[in-house]
Image 1 (cartoon, protein in one colour):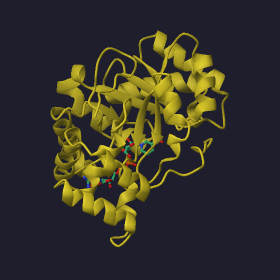
Image 2 (image 1 turned 180 degrees about the vertical axis):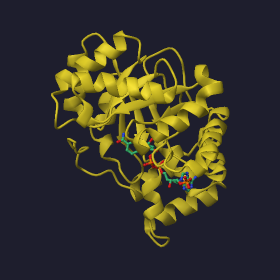
Image 3 (image 1 turned 180 degrees about the horizontal axis):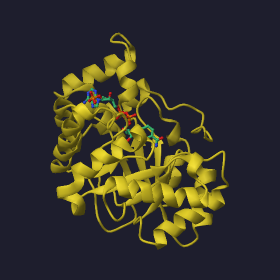
Image 4 (image 1 turned 135 degrees about the horizontal axis):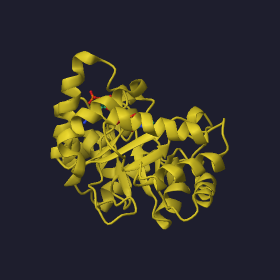
Length: 283
Ligand SMILES: NC(=O)c1ccc[n+]([C@@H]2O[C@H](COP(=O)([O-])OP(=O)(O)OC[C@H]3O[C@@H](n4cnc5c(N)ncnc54)[C@H](OP(=O)(O)O)[C@@H]3O)[C@@H](O)[C@H]2O)c1
């Protein structure tokens, strides 16, 4: 495991907290706040949310969770691609800041490539909110190498510091070109859905059997093995979402677990890298 920096001097542990599916149900609001706070107390300081999650509901949960911890927490939010016009980006971020009850976020991302607005316009607006101090850094999500190059060109001197992409044992397409490019250009990879797809593997699937054997060998769980594998490389932070204390206390074990190179190879063979590159969707 190594720390991530998002292009600054501050180092963050390479596990953060996702918020997809939280903020929908007022009866569990307090519980969701407490789980995020417990995560922060265990060094899961990077909290990933988005204007789109629960139509702003996830940002409201994050607002309450970060109140006592704002200076220690790295808050990430996103603009949805149908709002990626110049005016849309600016108003989306201002609405997010109002819901998050903070003067700025630490990182602001374009959620997906936009089928509605030119990237030049979106990145121009991202530059504006950066210059106004509404965000400390700019990034993107679900971008391939070609789009990353364009985004950086349109941002000019402002560094593009993050690309949030799906990456897990079950989804390794980003290894073909996106991860190497990001590592070469100091762009932090935020690995989303780092464990979700494992939950759909049947118990007798050979992949699951390898995971189960390794979990037994390291006296841990399959999910911890999977998270440890994701954060084995530098410049990658995984952002699992959990609403359960039991899962949270499992997930943080990935900070201290070290897989042997033989066992990493076993995983490599059981969950082979696809030949195709990360596919791009415009939303
Ligand atoms: N940029 C994008 O386009 C994009 C897309 C998808 C997601 N994301 C972000 O990435 C975050 C993570 O991705 P995700 O939520 O899709 O998937 P994930 O974090 O890989 O998986 C979440 C699921 O795994 C369960 N889980 C968590 N820890 C577990 C453990 N130790 N053992 C067993 N199950 C466990 C959770 O259930 P419990 O709550 O019951 O623990 C939940 O059902 C999101 O929350 C969101 O912030 C971004």
